[in-house]
Length: 105
Image 1: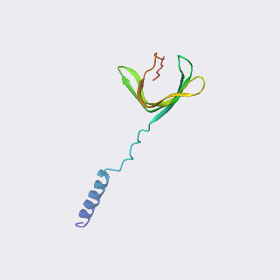
Image 2 (image 1 turned 30 degrees about the vertical axis):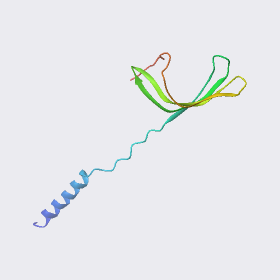
Image 3 (image 1 turned 90 degrees about the vertical axis):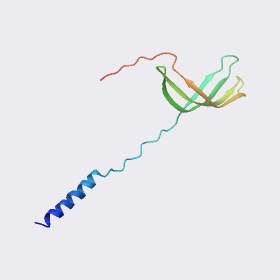
Image 4 (image 1 turned 60 degrees about the vertical axis):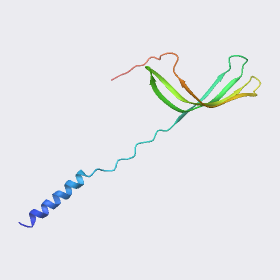
């Protein structure tokens, strides 16, 4: 009986330490930068813009969902010749009008 009590106390202490010891948590996923193709037409004289909006981050700016990112691309005239380039231009874009939304619980 004298030997059982210390053994039981030791086993109980070891089990308690194992239960309290923090477990390793999986690393939280890292944020990936999103990118999206951008294209459009030049209003005066014709031509096009083709590029990419990268490093996109969405945020709430004064209650409006806004996409902020870096724009890079090429401007071409109506004949297809390059007339300019844009490299790493920081921009913010908000929707022009609100879209209807439905929420269900």
